[in-house]
Amino acid sequence: MSRTKNVPDMRLLFEKSRPGRVGCNLPAPTTPEVDLQNELGAIRTELNLPELSELEVLRHFTHLSHINYGIETGFYPLGSCTMKYNPKVNERVASLSGFAGIHPLQPEETVPGALEVIACVQEMLQEITGFHRVTLQPLAGAHGELTCLMLIKAYHEARGDHGRKVVLVPDSAHGTNPASAARAGFSVQPIPTNQEGLTDLEALDAALGPDTAALMLTNPSTLGLFEKNIVEICERVHRAGALVFCDGANMNAMVGTTRPADHGFDCMHLNLHKTFSTPHGGGGPGCGAIGVQANLAPFLPKPVIERDAGGRAVFRHDVPQSIGKVSPYYGQFLLAVRALSYLLAFGREHMAEISRHAVLNANYVQARLKDVLPPAHDRFCMHECVLTAQPYKKHGVRALDISKRLIDYGFHPPTNYFPLIVPEALMIEPTETETKETLDAFCDALRSICREAVENPQLLHDAPGSQVVGRLDETAAVKNLDVCWRPS
Ligand SMILES: *Cc1c(COP(=O)(O)O)cnc(C)c1O
Image 1 (cartoon, protein in one colour):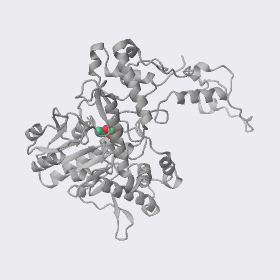
Image 2 (cartoon, protein in one colour):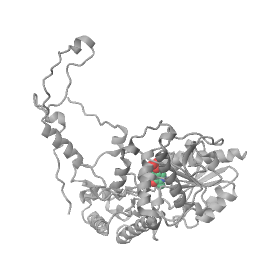
Image 3 (cartoon, rainbow, N blue to C red):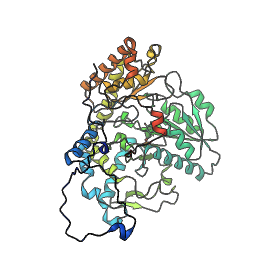
Image 4 (cartoon, rainbow, N blue to C red):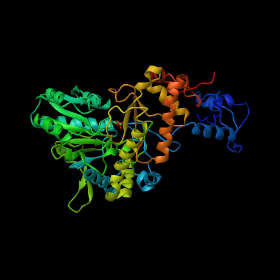
């Protein structure tokens, strides 16, 4: 059964406008009138503004807010994005005026509390990942990748090793990986994934050479699988004189359970806006914190924040081998505040519950769906599962049709067609914050849609039928973006 939404009045404010209708009651002016048109010559006399009552305006914007979908209104299974619920108390803490009101150019001696917050988060992330140093400067995951590659380049050059121009990137990687490598001036060589969904070791060996600067590896991979040969892989890369970067956007699968630095990685990025409690989407503020082993620490972006002999958190500007600054000021400070509030609430004792529940939930969804939507690789997954809608292709139904039909059942669709190496991919990341009841309702909906796909595929092709808009031309929407409506 599809749920029909209470479809709001979608007419625009201009269309609701009636001449002479007013929404506010300003007192009559008591100052002399000025003829701005004559005096300045540049003031518009005709301002085509809608005329409405206060109640109409209030209803209009309340209706608009109701047609939005967000974590506050429903389950958000978007794979690779970690759309978990972030406790509101962390927002509250980040909005305290002592934090939110700091100016980034305030003298250091006036912000000891802010430096303490950053130092604490750095230290906790060092403990969680096992790395020697962490910095919170990078402003996004992709920016953390780029920063790590700049560190790797500086490391090779400082050793007089100038021939390392190639970065190896598995074919399952997030698109930001090859983009960051290219942006850092490297050429990119793809490494195939084997039948088991793991890095192909023979292909890796064949690719490694004196021109290899680094391997960028996502663990768990974008297939939701733990790279079980990770220690071996890091050793082989190191034997070739290259370094290993970990794309840590999937840290939600490992928090408190296992530490990437112990696996042999030289550096990694973390997405504080995925794993550590800043809500994201819509391109909002991010923090791609990075962790490094001691070999890369001398090159970290400056200033670094560390503790002086008395234990106070201070800036150190004297970092002679630093790659320089990678963000104005010191990154997105309020993300550090949210992260600290979140980390302290769990504490060392409960940190592992994040990853254990995230992994349990993903495996539950995979197990409940595997007979209708087979997993790309039939084994235990980590925090997300990658399923394929290929069995429905013979009925003319594709992954996108299934996703669109989910909207009619009241759910946000999962990630579609990523990773690129899985045909008709549906990538589901339930996160640790959802209940079994929610996961059951979601799986029931998908199971019912898979039945419809066989019995009545047209239902899926016509979906969604419950929203203010139907199936959109997503390519045209991106290429010819026009969000400005003008009165005719
Ligand atoms: C989200 C993500 C990134 C990029 O992070 P941004 O903050 O969006 O730049 C990189 N790799 C993986 C696997 C991701 O899921």
